[in-house]
Length: 430
Image 1 (spheres, rainbow, N blue to C red):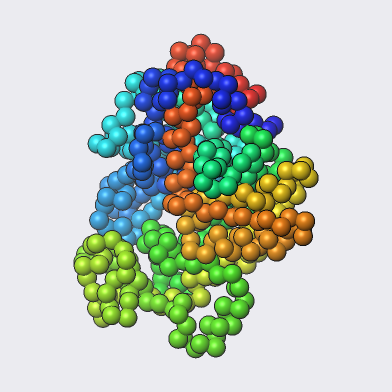
Image 2 (cartoon, rainbow, N blue to C red):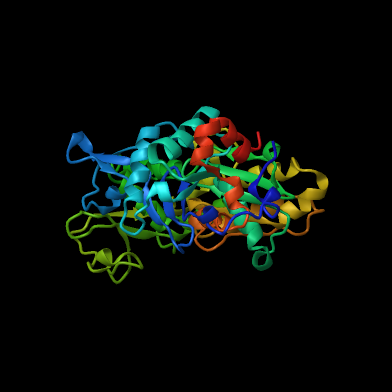
């Protein structure tokens, strides 16, 4: 199947900009975080897609938005509704969505609103049905549309074509919490047969960093939340991995990538930060910057971890995953297209998702794709948009405000009359 919302968008001119008259809430349902906001908002609220509790069952259960609001995040145990990219616990997903919907900045009234939410590629029919029941029967939204996050990213890439160089085709590289997908589009359609998946994402990187620090320095095996923040603060992707390893050995501890990271104590230090030579916190949240990294603070020394952990995206075999990395996945996806489509695909690669935020990700991906591409393809362009982790959500917002959106939705009345069959037909083209 090769369907995509762009394919007949312009023909369906019955919408009035936002859900046929209803305000539309857009939910990008990622494995790590849920991005939620009105289609007219500039930035969504972001909540952890999990519930958490203190180790040993101590403290209250924290749901979604409550996790970031709690002060003491030490030793939190997490339960997530999404495993390997798929929603396996619909009831927990309902609780997390509700924690965002009741936020004062949103105050979603489902009976008076439409909802667009994202799903994984190749989602199971049973999960689609459960999520449709959640949207219509549990929350009672007036109208609903669901689509893969990559589709929303591709829609925005094409909508931004004048500025970014995207035309009728592109490859979306969506590297998120659970996995990384290379998804080609051509002529307004998703080329399902050419999609390539790499089973490594932000979750695997966080666990690898935990293992490395625990083995070499101190036990952080129970500090998933803290280490995940550390990963986001310190990670970089280098273009020459082995060359950087050699440089660090020769530098004998004086390499520019070496740093000291101050761990939070959730008393005076609420968030970890990079310790500068002056002892001041680097460009991180105010509560961390207020305190100097004194000798009393617990720290870890980080060097090769800064680039060897994100290197797993390009070398999954380093942790025993028998798959090629992101670069070969893109080349394989493009090779599966018709010959006439390949030059356009190579010229329009857009990298989105949380891992695309890592400094150097775009440059490394560009180098790997260019190195393996045929000499016939002289133009290889990898575009990393601003705030790539929000790109799919913003694509959903753009789609929700397009003229064709209302015709692609299923209303609550239609759902209760025709059920899941209509949803599959309208959302998936089945």
